[in-house]
Image (cartoon, rainbow, N blue to C red; front, side, top):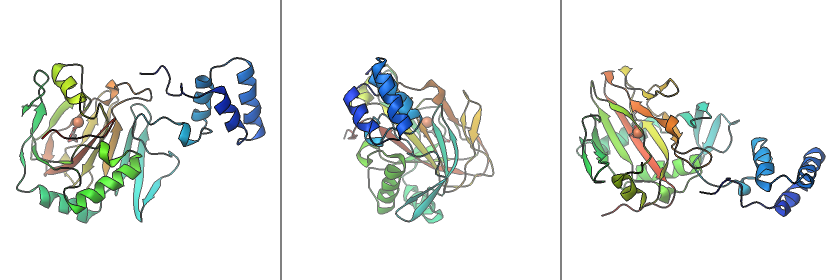
Length: 279
Ligand SMILES: O=C(O)CCC(=O)C(=O)O
Ligand SMILES: [Fe+2]
């Protein structure tokens, strides 16, 4: 891991960039270079003030590009940004999926649903887990047209390549069903390391709600006291790593027990690098 996310930038890069900025920022850059400030520290201030073009921003984690935009138009499909949190990085969306897309995904999962498994820390294999009482259906990348469409939309929304995604997982929680607090990133265990070999760390998670749930069934973030309520077509995205690319412990999260109704979600996990599922 590099010491700074901007450590590849040079003073020359910053001088070239300064020519594209207004007088006060140009003067500020020149003064700080003369004072001997590191390019990384100058770049950090520029990035914080949105003066650093995206080509200089390192791609460490998926994220929406612009926090000022409340609507993101992706090829005519308008996704609404409902709520954002900086740390941990969480973004709540509405209308990420159409009602028809939700229904289609549920229909595709029907018949493939089996009791949820989690990754065993000791062996790296999947096993049944009492802490995850959901039924799961696993899909491969682009397996169906609707999945391909949703995966491309997510890639555009989160600025992260389709190929870095794991196959979509659809989960069904019945009354009382839950997923107890956990992290999605892989830890430094035998099982975790085995998973890191293919595609690297999980850097982002997007939980898309395919159904409304009358009571319970939210996605909670206990470390920050936040709970996202399921809404059909809506979604919650969070970055499993922080701005430096380190795993973010604040992303502890849970699927809280369903009280009334049935909760369907589609989860997309994305990796640092292209992901190829072991056959
Ligand atoms: O059910 C939820 O709301 C959360 C699901 C989740 O954490 C996961 O699929 O990794
Ligand atoms: Fe999770």
